[in-house]
Image 1 (cartoon, rainbow, N blue to C red):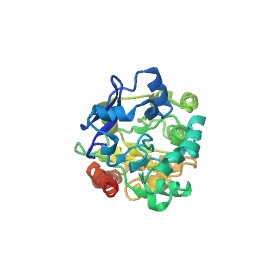
Image 2: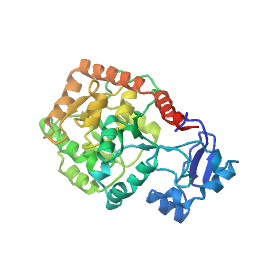
Image 3: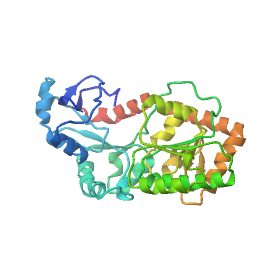
Image 4: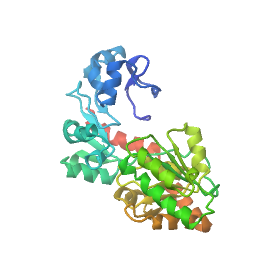
Length: 339
């Protein structure tokens, strides 16, 4: 997290662990077999000699006044140092993509939550999840994620395309959108738009490919595993709207990213979407038949006033949820712990 003063403990794919005061971030994952395995298991710190890494930067463990982690992990090598960790969601407890994730969140995550002095929740919904999980309310601080507006907003829809930024995981509910899109193509055979899904393959990939073959026009669905950042921005700006059909999210950052570009969004009526986007998105029932989603899509095409209104309101939200605000609020959580 840039903007937080202090040293950064990072895993560098080329040189292993390093401690630095710069905002530099590694571009590659750990390359050694052991570190790669620990990384996959979310146990990277257990392959490190943290005190030796600190010493390489001229620091002793006694010099560390506090630890901030943008992840839900305390640093076990510094048990006497106050620590602030970040919980992004507890989705694997309810909709896990693997047994490893379910067991980690059920048995290992509570250890980190108990050891931390403060836990940052990235939404009030996550805060509620944490309290239901047994974390005391006084230990939790809500800090919404931030975004930076880097370009002028799009002025009008450039196509009828719908874009989703979602892994092929059950909670992302991509299959629901594909089924709704099939109904849209049946209802409007001349529909010129595509459904473009950008995200890693997962347990739902086989299902999505079967649904693709059942579409009236299979070529209208694009499943793209990854794109570089500039191509992704261009895709967003050339689309009609972003769709998020998730059944559970801690924040759903792609929705905010789309709003920073001035792109309207259609989102599922789940708690975190209602918390953040109640005034600046169109909502649909992620457990319904998809008709309300399709109605929203058609309205965005036919009603430019609605498209423009959602664009403006979304941009206003993005302008309020700045990265600078997020950094300041994180510092407000950390500073009282520093003696």
